[in-house]
Length: 147
Image (tube, rainbow, N blue to C red; front, side):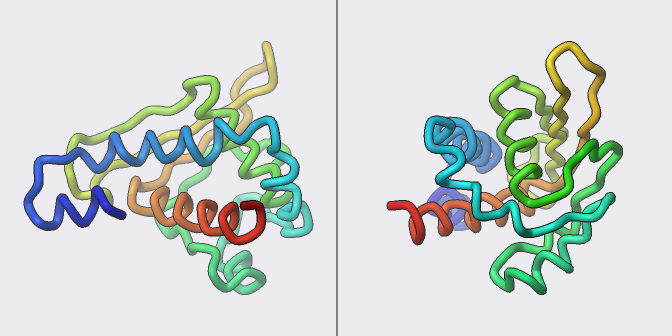
């Protein structure tokens, strides 16, 4: 949010780079305590394709993620598995960034995952803006419940 505010004031900062740094800090580095951080999300079921409006009804502070598109959603039956897939995509450098705008809505992030040696079975895209909302939600959960 600091980087986005600086950009709004006209500072020469790159909001997408900050988004990727946030991904690393929130999803990749806590892997040693991953179950402690994300285990509580097992009870939140996901459909295929996921309907995050339904998740939002169960967890009102969860972001809607309207830009999220799924081309493959292999065995991602709950929110815990979804978070795990996001983490795996980042950890294994299975993400692509489309666009160079400082407008997070105009930049699309592709995340994909697969079991070791198997074909890609989970492949999503969403705007950097929605990814930011997701990161802020996860950060709040980690701070509120685990620090």
